[in-house]
Image 1 (cartoon, rainbow, N blue to C red):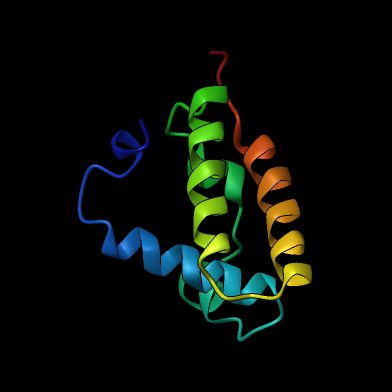
Image 2 (cartoon, rainbow, N blue to C red; image 1 turned 90 degrees about the horizontal axis):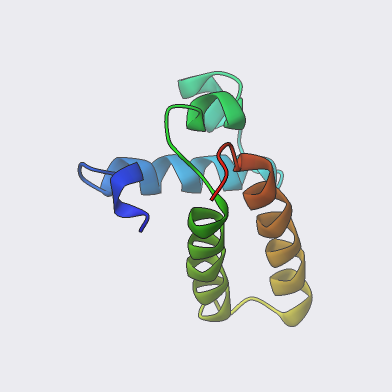
Length: 94
């Protein structure tokens, strides 16, 4: 379901997501230095993101968080952010 959003090598998108998350949670601003302001909706506008894509992405992120080894408190904070961000990215009806 999500592969059409990333038709090429998954390495670069994974690196961008990692850089964004590091910066968002208070780490170095490397993401913005390399790519400019995150502008998440603008960057995702070329892709059709409906409820099904949102839900699939959230499921993948929840699985990643569950295996991260983070404390329950950190996991809850990450999942809350991912829920809000995923809802924000929806740009098409199902």
